[in-house]
Amino acid sequence: MTIQSSTSLRAVTSYDASLKPGFIDPVFDAQAVFRASLLATAYPGRVVSLDRSFTAPRPFSPATAALCLTLMDFETPTWLDHQTSCAEAAQWLGFHCGLAVAEGPMAARFAIVTDPLTMPRLFEFHPGNVEYPDRSTTLIIQVPSLTEGPPTAWTGPGIKTSATVGIGDLPFWFWSDWDLNGELYPRGIDVLFTNGNALMGLPRTITVEA
Image (cartoon, rainbow, N blue to C red; front, side, top):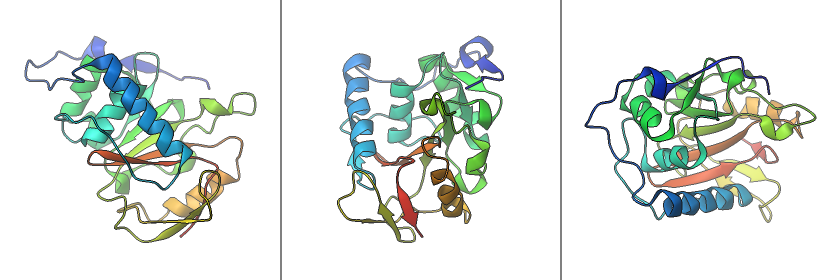
């Protein structure tokens, strides 16, 4: 992936002493969250609860904040949606992660979405390339529910037959864009949905019928 431009939050932000703390035990806690993210990716459609809990900065849920602390640092250009970039979370990310902020979705290795209804279309994020399909964007999308949205049927690796999943408050175009994302395989974006202290994986290999 070609990184267009990025700016370190650590370099441009003056920090408030009231910033919320991160992990109590950074190494042990990050390992636990990483294992949970692998489990969620290996078994798409399964709600995976984190056994780490702390007070997250606005507008993050604990699961969103935990994934950021685990997956992101100054070498991972990350796109922030408007709600995140204008909130307490932006300073928090700069302080705890030294986060490099990507100027646009196509330049991002990760994207944080806390307001799904205003998020960019999926094809605006980087799908990777043939030589390095793993260099695509991974989206972390915070939603109001992992179970109470419109029912969808998921099939693919990690799902025995099919899974009925109800992600809440996604844009009307999301699943049609997901169909197009599947056509790019082995390229394509991956998604981690978060809600409260739980997460759910949606890798590019999964087919969804809405």
